[in-house]
Structure formats: C-alpha cells, structure tokens
Amino acid sequence: MSAADAASSLWIALFCTLLPCLCAVEQRARAGEGSRTSRLGISIPMRDGKSLAADVLLPAPEGEFPTVFIHTPYNRQYGDTPLPDELLARELLDRDHYAYVIVDWRGFFGSKAAAKGVGKLDHGRDGHDVVEWIARQPWSNGKVGTWGISAVGAVQYRTAIEQPEHLTCIVPASANIGFPYEQFYYGGVPQLYYLKVMETAGHEVGKLVRDHPVNGEFWRAMDGTFDRGRIDLPALFVTGWFDTHPHLKIDTYRQIRAKGKRHYDDMKLIIGPWLHTRIGKPEQGALSFPEAEDYVARQTLKFYDFWLRGDKDSGWRAMPTVQYFQMGSNEWKMADDWPPPTKTLLYYLRSGRRLDREPPHREGHDTYVSDPADPTPTVGGNLIELARARMKVPIGPQDLSKRVERRKDVLSFTTDVLSNDLEVAGSVKVKLYASSDCDDTDFAVRLSEVYPDGRSMLVADGIQRLRFCGSLEDPQLREAGEIHEVTVTLPPTAQTFLANHRLRISVSSSNYPQYEVNPNIGRRRLFGPKKRVATNRIYHDEAHPSAVLLPVAGDERERKKQ
Image 1 (tube, rainbow, N blue to C red):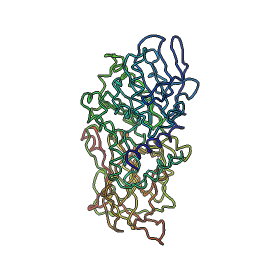
Image 2 (cartoon, rainbow, N blue to C red):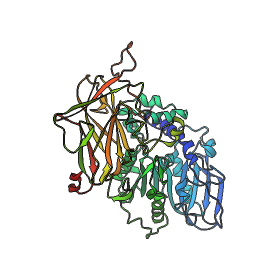
Image 3 (cartoon, rainbow, N blue to C red):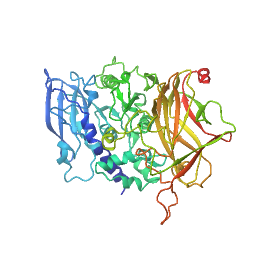
C-alpha cells in the first residue's frame, strides 16, 4: 500500500470513527425565521458529474452575503433543520449577515450515491468545487470561509491545499494536518485507547499502525502527502489542553504559518482548557472553566467579520497571534508565539517521595514492581469522549489520589505547599534515571496539582518506552540492571499551581487503556513467557539527579521562593 493510499485509509477510518460522537453534539435552531430563507436538500455539481447533498441558509431572500462553508461527514441534517455545531448556534451564528452552506461528504449520508463508481475519494477537491459553486451564486458576495471541528476541521486543510480562488479564510478546530507517527505512538508506545476507538467502529487500521512501530520512512511518507506550503491564507487554529494530541494541533499551526508568505501575520492560534468535543463548554472532566465558555465563538465571529464582511472595526487586527487559557488562575493570556518566553525551573526527586529545589546528594533510589496483568489504570487525560461511554474511562482533568496514587506500583513525588503561585506554560519534561530487571519496559508520568482538600487533579500525562529512550527511529533493547536517562515529555499545557497547593508527579510503568501495556519482554523467546513482572527503580542521588523541568513564567526572585 502506498503512503497516499494508506493516508486515505486512515483519513476515512479516523473520522468515521468519531461520527456518532460529533453527531450527538450538533445543535439545531429554527430555520426561516422572519425573512430568512432555507434551501434544503439541494444538489451541488462536482467536476466529475456527480453531485453532493447540501443545505443553504440565507439571511434574506435577496442580497449578496459572505458564506460559511461546513463540509461534514457527520450528517448535515441531524434533526429537523440543518445547523452547524454548538459554536455556531450561539454568538457565532449570525444569521443576519452570513449565508451557511452545509454539505455532506461524498459517500456519506445525503452524498452517499456520489461515491458509486469512484475510486479514491478526494474531499479536498470536492471542497474546492463547492467553494467555487458558492462564489457563482447570485446570493454570494464571492467570499467564502470554512469552519468545523475534528474531521470538519481537517478537511479544511485539504480544501485549502487545492487553492480555490474564492476561499478567503479557514477556521480548523481540534484538527492537525497529516498523519505523523506521534498521532499513534507516544514515546514509542502504541496509543491503545485511540486505536481501540477506531477498531470499535469497524476500521481495522490497527494492523497498519502496528506494522510500523518505528518513526521511519513510512511515517515520513504518510505525513509528506500534505503540502503545508499551499495553505497561505488567513487562518484561525483552535485546540485545547485536553484535546487529543494538542501538540500536533499546535505543530500544524506552526508548520503552516512558517510556510506562509502573504498571510504569515494573518494566522493565529487559540488554546483553551477544552477536550476534543467540548470546545466552548465550561465543564471539562471533573473541573469547570466558565471563563472559557463560548470564547472561540466570539473570537471566530471577529475573524469572520474582518475577513468576510470587511469590518475593519471588528477588533480582529488588535488580537495577538496566540491566545491561551492559563488554568489554575483561569485567565486568558496573550503571546506572540507558542510557547511564550519562559525559564526552566527544576524540582528534583528526593528521598521521602519529595520534590525539592535542592538537588539530591547521598540518597539512593525508589523501587516499584509493575505487573502487566494488573496495569495502572487510566484516570483522565487527552481522550475522546466517544470512547468514554464504550470503555468506561474518565476523561480530561480527574482526581488521581484514590485510583492511581494509592497503588503500590506508583511512585508519587510531591513539593511542599507552595508559598506563591507557580505559572507553567509549555511542555513539562521529567528526566528520570531509571533501571529495570527487564530489557524493555515503560515509564509513565502524570503531572498533577494537589489541592488543600487532598484532590490530585491531573494536568498532563505522558509515557516513554525504554527501548526508544535514545531515538524513536532506532530502538535498542537495554541490558537488565543498567541505569538509563529516560526523559518523558508531557503534552503542552498552561497551568498555574496556586499558592497553598502542591505540585506532584507520579511515576509508574503503565497507563491503561490509554497506552498499550508493555509485557516487559523485549527479546521474545518461542517457548518463553508472554509477560513478565518488572522490578523498576528510579534513582535520585548526586550522580543521578532525576528531576522535573518546568517551563515557568514570572520573576526569578519569586521562583526562588518556591
């Protein structure tokens, strides 16, 4: 299978998988109020003679309007009347000034027949044809913007790569471009939960992924099928700290912006405290962020007003390049890029399960036993809401104190009570000096904030497979008992650890089912055991100063007080 064919297979599988979830969050409103006009179930012709099913919502029977185009695999008619996702059902739904065109993907719902007799589907090419069809309509002012989350976000990249003349701007939310290795593996560990969701929906992409466990030529070819340089137009990128793969969404923004020539300064990024399918909602996991409610809707309307309606007073030009939500202090921050300028603050792992600013001296190590038959459970994290109902896994920020940190196979290291707020913004790294009596194992790390009432709320988590600790391209099995430097890089976040709270990291060798459990047997033998209990050690002495590396903002004198 070629890289292009493999990418196409993954494209269909990934986004068909999310369909039940995202259909469930679509909102509806009454069409045809006042002088508004709805044209439902029309056909839009494609260049190959096929047609796509679409609904058109117009502000009035007559006039020329800018258009928001939503190209969806999630059924344009979920309910009595078509309307896009909840973000457009509130402030963003400006029915008085914008036309909306909602189109079913070829091969999906109303456009199912358009796939008959067609080989590989090209949704980007179809998107191009829809944009140009819109521009030819008497009710169009010739300016088209796109919008949507997840698959409806990712298809915007494909449409933009086709460079339709009248595509003016895009708003891809919760969507990265391409299929990089890190979308399926984290630190060399298969993202089992992510794969299980796809397989549950009947898409056997797991074999394709598992056949390529190394970040090599296959994944470079997969990711190289998308030409970032052809996406040079105003763009508003959106993701969340608890989105799936937020680092890849941020990388997409940075890659496309770096290639931009005419519109480098017109590409901006919003990062909120959101899960993949809960952008704009206050409740996220076990926490609530009312300060972030509907924020994207308001900013997107400013973006559209500026680029599609020509409203120079919309306030968009004054907005910074990056807007991100600082959890803990629960406030919006502005920056010229991501990550913002920070300095690295080290907290060292110490005896007594402490995190301390002073490095260790003559201390030693902590030991735990990891049994693959009884893995440490996943409690919260960057997971898709769809899978929660099927796999019974809590998502987003959750309390780790009972189900995770009380286990014997987990080592938790905690700071003293903080005397001042500690503002973290970026990717936290945890450098562990570790050994195992097995030639391969995993090291899973969770970062949490400990509240005065004892809750230990997850901020971010990551994992690293020992054989990949030197390179994701050249895995090497290790000698049992040898001490290795293992760095676990956590997903990006922005978290203020509040005064009177504490910061904690928890180290184990599994986080199941988010990540596949390592059987702890690297050199497999035909008649040997299929799993092995591992005895793993984390060292903290003068020669092996395991530490948490925090990207922090604020005054250095304040940091020294911590």
